[in-house]
Length: 490
Image (cartoon, rainbow, N blue to C red):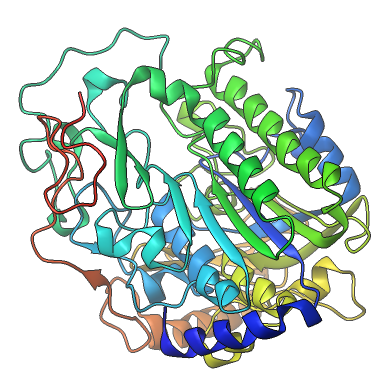
């Protein structure tokens, strides 16, 4: 923990009984489409999320990032992803880089305010020991360190369970992947090693087909257990599911339940999981003092069955369908039931918002791009979200939004998102003044974070290690020096 936060932790531990602060649960779904749940238009049954929205607030203009790792960096640090994780795309197994251990995370902010902290699920901010959650403010961790598709094809990581498993590739885990132009970000393709399940700093399982099917249930059980164990103190639970990222592995209880696809089956299991968490909070009478956020790490991939209606675009793009995500905030008695906001909000807002609710003094010491949106959530008079939002994809600034106006910088297409949420009618020719205004806002951001480069004044250093190694080798041997429970995993 950073020195300032260590002092704050000691102070807050002494005085925690004198200041009531809310518990916080952040549920992050992987690759969930904007319309993949009932409150945002899905055709499948999601009764728990329907109830959550009826009792809480829908955030209608909430932004993530186009892909996994950058989105999670924004969640953890309160900054634009490019500022704190300047990589071209996402991280892969045995990456030499990751979120800098010197970065202050939301977990460290809350830990410094006396909170118990846990991360249960997919991390994806670096798989080397220096980058794992227990070195970034979390008291405990249980999950996989990157995406569920980053393992051997023969062990279920490259295909859905309704397809035959590909034959084992003898070169798997042996070297660099095909087309790997950025080797420092890790191993790709057939070079990827066995997928590890990590508990704190222990590799506890080698993930194969059967384990894939069990993750949503196991993460949910761990989440409920954590809540029960910490009901007497403030807690922060970060619950980033593998679901619904390809390959799609709902549990056997949910397989076929939607009658549509495995992806939709898994979305229904996600709804079940949310219900377990909310029911536990109600049972323990913690609901009136717990803020729960449900969201996705990016827009859904259309080619894998996601639904982003009415948004245009897919995961990986800076069209609205790639970066605007379905988000619900729930806090009975504090957040107005059945409410919604069109204010511009983003994942980088969670750190300052949670920090403010926890009365953490450390937030004021940080340079953040996010803002405290608790006034928006709580319906305070004159509360507002962001005036401007910048759409980065990797190193590239691709679009900028101010109010209802969005300008795509490459094509110079201008859209009025309140009248044209699907980005169908380019009105640039009719609003030259708006185009000019947005271009100036983009140039101001480029002076800070740059464009098409990671060499800019506001870009911070990546975490970096020498000689990165897979946590499990191709032969099942757990990385030497890692605090493993088992030397080899079959």
